[in-house]
Image (cartoon, rainbow, N blue to C red; front, side, top):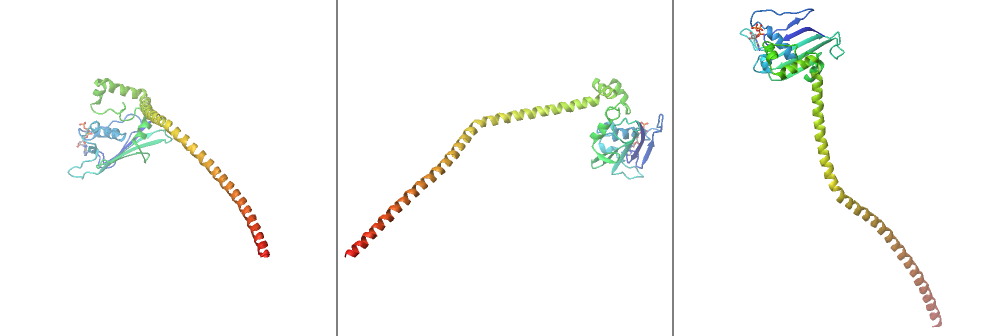
Length: 262
Ligand code: ATP
C-alpha cells in the first residue's frame, strides 16, 4: 500500500484545489515558515477522522476551513481526499486504488466517503486497522509529537506500539466483545427478574385455569341435563295428551249414547 495523492480544497491555507502527488521514493515538502507545510500533515490526519481540534493545531474544528485573507473570502466548507495505491491488496477491499474523503461545513456537519461513496468514519477506521495509518497511528507524527511519543505517558506509548504491532484491532474487537458480553449479561439478569415475576404469577393462574376448566365441564353437563329434562317432559306430555284424547273420545261416545237414549 502506498500513498498516491492528496487533494485539498478549502482546507486551512489551501482555498484553491491543490493536488499533491507522492511518487516513488521519499517526498519532501519545503517552504518558508508559515507557508503551510504542516497544514498538509494536518490534512492527512483530518481526512483519516481526527476529532480533536488541538491535534490539528486549532481551537475549534471549523478552524480547518479556509478562514479568508484580505484578498480572498472565507469558504463555507472544505474537503480533503487521500488516495492510496492498493495494488498489493494490503487494504481489505477489492479496489486497487482507495480514496478516502472527508468534507466539513462551518455548520458542524461532516461527511466521509470511501471511493466517493458515503460511509461512516467507522468503515474508514476498520479499513485501516493495523496498517499503521489512522488517527492514533504511528505513521503520522505532527510537529512536536515526537517528544510526546518519546517522553509521553506509558499508556500513549503502548497504544502507538500496539498499533505498530498490529494488535490494536484485536484489542478494539476484544473491547467491543466485552461490551456486548456485559450487555448480554444485563439482559440475562433482566430476563431472570421477569422469569421470577412470571413464576410468582404461575400459581394463581393455574388455579384460575383449573376453575375455568371446571366451569366449562359443568356448563357442558348442564346443557346435556337440560336437554334430557326437556325430552322427559315432552314424552310425559305426549303420553298425557294420548290419555286425555282417549278419555275425550270415550266421553263423546257416552254423550252420543245418552243423546240417543234421550
Ligand atoms: P512552520 O515551518 O513555521 O511550521 P508551516 O509551513 O508548517 O510553518 P503551517 O503551520 O502549516 O506552516 O501553516 C500556517 C499558515 O496556515 C498560517 O499562515 C495560517 O494563517 C494559515 N492557516 C491556518 N489555518 C488557516 C485557515 N483556516 N484559513 C486560512 N489560513 C490558515
